[in-house]
Length: 167
Ligand SMILES: [Zn+2]
Image (cartoon, rainbow, N blue to C red; front, side, top):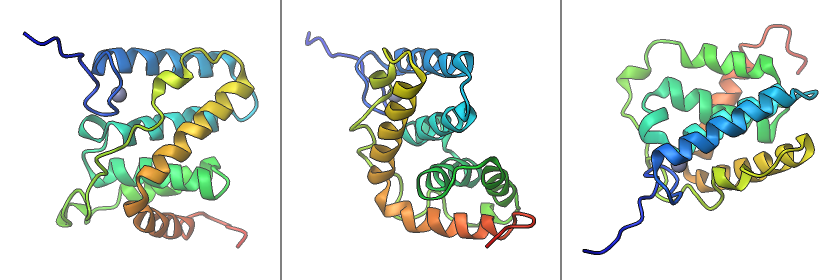
């Protein structure tokens, strides 16, 4: 018998899916507990990134994908404000998506884990968490390059739904 190390099917983290989820839950609680200015933005970003690294469990519909991939695009390429996230959710909640093939071409990337959630495990200060989650988010965003044009399109659609938008 060969000993096979159990690894997370989503991000490849050694230890398996439940170890991965435990680490994520821990970091998520830490971000909430520290509650610095703008920590909601960081907290939301980490949930979006985690979903993109575990699409089998967390990105099974257009609603999930628009919310999470659109959310990462909104945070990295725009201001990550709540109104944008709300508009994305509004866009994602529209009917009609069920008539389109899912996942959209060319599908989810095979490699999603050049940076994984364990990189955040020992970060206990807000500034380190912000930087660590940003690095994790950017690596995942790069891995999703084939779907970036679609994500940008969703963001553009969502921005039109923001009331009293400035631009
Ligand atoms: Zn994982």
